[in-house]
Image 1 (cartoon, one colour):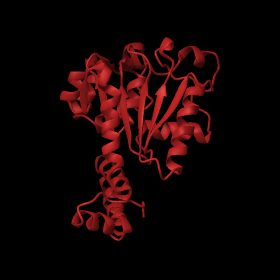
Image 2 (cartoon, helix red, strand yellow):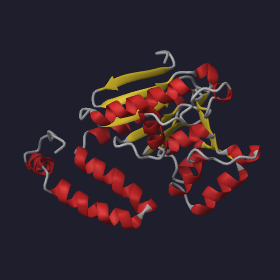
Image 3 (cartoon, helix red, strand yellow):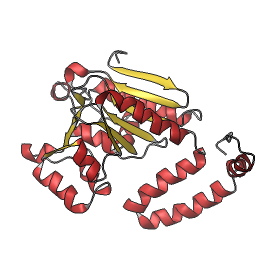
Image 4 (cartoon, helix red, strand yellow):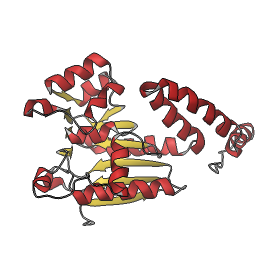
Length: 258
């Protein structure tokens, strides 16, 4: 993988992943997907990484989805069964263990929007456009776009997927898909601020919230089971005691993640 196509930066407990193919509208080729997957795996294994920010270079596009040139040339664009590809696929399903904040510097359509749907929070430039136009090409958003109904009301999810129409960042905010809309130059800083606020909290409690809130939408019965599990883990943890003690002593807590 070319270091120029994919950048990784560390901001304390936050890791920033940058898609760096602006000349190709940051389309996903095999090396980019593998790089994202590898970074996700590293973050999940590093207790010092408390959040991820996913962004892209340039001001035209966050991600145009799959690189069709690479696909048509026979390149593996995430379909083979490798640890990196599996990690990337978990990212698109919102199943990464570490909280992920999407920072959409520009337009995200098709697979680009599907990538954002896997993020827990989304910050978007006020000039960005979004859409799932696959039906206009005789296809459907098969990379997870149909899961948009987990983030917005059913009627709106059906409208967006059945018509393939584009929508603005402001509209995305109105329907609850996007958490913040800011000028393009403020997207990364705003996303980092969200990530740092998440990273400052107890890691066990954050992990419980990430899993349980998502399950409450997709599988309520499983959510009830996992709630009992997390109650036993979190409330009996050293971090729970530290959180209470730090509050009483009026100081910042020192988390151990256990």
